[in-house]
Image 1: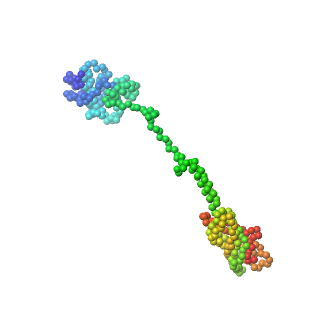
Image 2: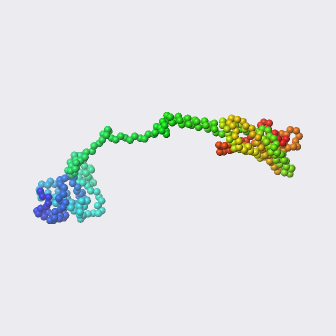
Length: 349
């Protein structure tokens, strides 16, 4: 059977609105077999042929005569040459731009393709139940290249699974069994050194006093007292295990009853050995001025240190406030020291 239309088909071609007389189609040479169930054609309602049922009804009719076969082939060739498929160089006269983005379907000689559903829609190839052997034979027919079989590796051929990164079993290159006791020992050593080397505030106590200079009493209109005393101070450093370096101890003399400032003194820098008791002789400068003779602070000073008393004078009611400046400690500890049970005897009495 010839693949090109003969002269006997001229009358038939003139009746076809899409036929081009006296010129065979270039696509007819590569025209697929019309009996191929997997050829790509259009849906009747989407093609440029409109509802030309004669062409599509011929697909389902048996091709008994050669004339009908040639006529069907020629019509299919012309339809394909004037179609808007991607491989065509011509545009269908009935092309609708609004429907150009609708999907293409693969129509088959199957019951689900030829018979629309209840909604009037034709089924697609995805809805048809096809044997897998049909796809294998079709792929072998279309592609002469050899197919590579898909081989799934067995469990023995699989690459080794990457293991999760575990924490190192060493500390700075040393085993944990050695590192942990080492750090415990280190903390213990630091605590011991801290206990023995950390400086602590010494304990102070006051003893007897002697006059260095004075006294000078002011008149009744401007009562005052000025005098310099030597005061014995005992420093107990039993709380420290190592020698303690003291930059200075600043003393402030306060009246016990009124807490008014009446004098001051300093020790300057010195070092006291650890676990020892040391006595220092500190110079204290007494300087107080009152507004009147009825001032309570002046009365306390004059009662204990004044020259107009007959008999034993009462003890002087004063307190010593000590501010420590110890080497190695940023802050300055403060201690309030009071005389013993016998009180502080004024050296001027």
